[in-house]
Image (cartoon, rainbow over all chains, first blue to last red; front, top):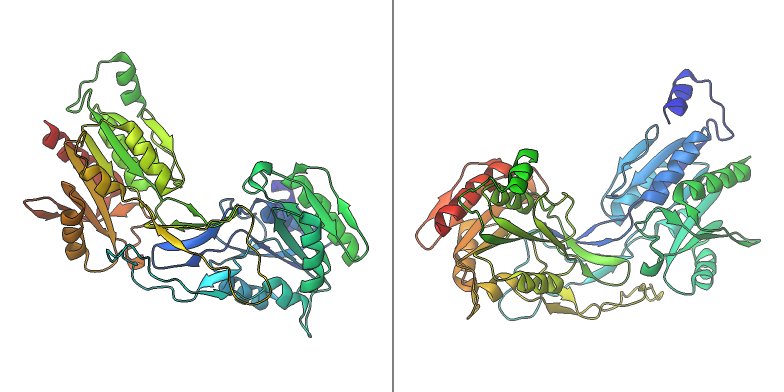
Length: 231
Length: 231
């Protein structure tokens, strides 16, 4: 990383993605219920962070839009910190144009429509305050289906707990993205929040299952594929 | 801390709480929605952790029941890690008897009654899956109102965002605890997740407001009061 940073500063590095702008989203989103409570998910941001670092190492100019992850963001990339799905979409749109966009964040499908600006209280009735939900913007579908300024390569992630390939294949078609990186985040796998990943990369042509390996290794392999696709 | 640990090992330390068993809860709870999503709150566990360390430094045998905090638990205490409010109550009950119990955790008032064992999916209707909520056990009230085996001193925390003293006074009466440590966790204060705290300690006799100070300092002052009360 230090060597990469020095090479970057000296301008001596011309990797296969040199000068290309690539967008990566990462981490969970937090959706507020009231000033102290929120809805979260178990994403640590590890896979998105490793991917941003791997793309940077191939010479890309990386914009890294991250929710409140537990893993620190990589050095040498432009970091944009957000909390909610709505903020993440706005940050992604502001970061375009990009030649490739990789949506590794675990974005909440729903937000609380009636989030309170004071802490909600038990009223003694035993009945919780009613929460109503609103569907969040679909960042992957929105960018995949842009009429103007769509990145040449749009990659989505699918975190599934069952029927992984079938769900991911349907997701690729529905969203309109180019590739889906599908992984099984069943608690038994230890993948969500862990250091390893086992993924299947789905393209228009093929479904390629990679052996379980470190998230850093998945990131390097995927970054190399992205470089090939943009070459 | 090292000195305290060595003194503990050598048995040479006889602080005012020597040999007394004190229970401290700390951190947020996480209430699952499905295998990857959960409801959380912004507690870092910093105040509860500092308090457990301060009680240990006065010689107490501390059982530290903690939710998924961002701050690591203190050395030299018995750590019991839990995730949900129901697990926290069970751990507290299992840790009794204790001479004092301090409930610093930010426990979720409600859990999702219909948590799913598979990841919930958008079904394309735009309507989120219905979540129904159930009220969590009230750990502070349960222990405060124990007919047998109630700790001599039960201390609750009140995290409020408005009308702090009024809410905390009502809470003390309603729960049946001895003291309430009330603090204002409005986002503007930076207290929840921050390193300082500004508290009011409510007892049957008085409401005493302490100046804003480091959470470690609040912990030492409160631990000293607890030692006085048990003397």
